[in-house]
Image 1 (cartoon, rainbow, N blue to C red):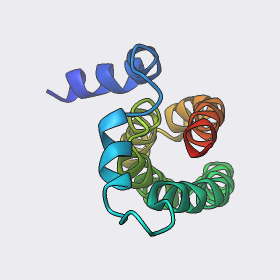
Image 2: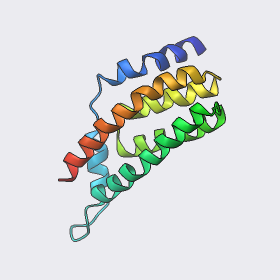
Image 3: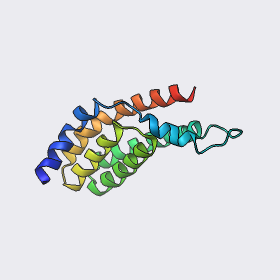
Length: 133
């Protein structure tokens, strides 16, 4: 079982590329939270996500550079939760792979996976900004 999990983690960037950047059903669900005369809830939540993620990406980089597996786990977990809440289908598995690698004590693997995270976040940013128009 552990071998299968590791194989899935290694393949996360490859598997994730087959998914859309955002889950349309999550966008619809978030938008449904607001009333007709209220500001766009999706736009507000998206702005908060887009402001928050860069802070966590910096913290993740610092934790990896500082060889702090515990911090990597915590930050990757937060990033994964935010990605799931926003429906960022390709970003969430990357964050999970980073978290699992750090839990297993492989900061080298976590750093490798983190290398894909910046570009995936940019794809999420572009998709969210397009949806907010």
